[in-house]
Length: 196
Image (tube, rainbow, N blue to C red):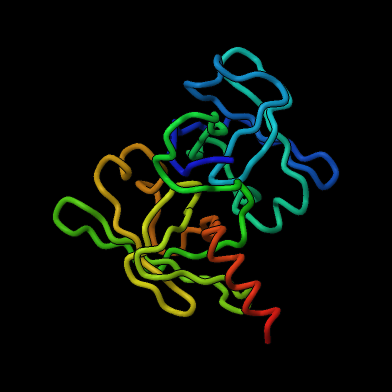
């Protein structure tokens, strides 16, 4: 379980294909606090630490993960949003995030609005995921509030702190991002689908 509050931005240092898997090595300020077998969210995708070497650790993404997220398009030196699993008893500063990406989306618009930024994302609505005004959404692992909700797109407003301390500062039109929709909304949508 995660909260969507990004702790660090890691830098991709190595990408190694092995059959259908991708081993991703990341340099991070939190590497010294990690241990093998620990879960960490990478752009919102929960992956297990499989190796640690000084300030670089490695995780493995399988085909299912690569097919449903933006991890398969990572390049050396890309910035990745990182969050360790929440600890019981901590404040839940974002919202409940599982680290299971539902689908990807494309950034369609970035507008600087005098000290903040508005990002718009379009996604495939045939997968039956939904957003609602003022509801929660996770974009590349970052817990955010939906500003403008439509059937296949939504917008979020980003404050300067989030812009600087996540990989939102690298987004432009055409950037592929990971989405995890609000878990409560997913259950409601599924119940409604079963009733019909």
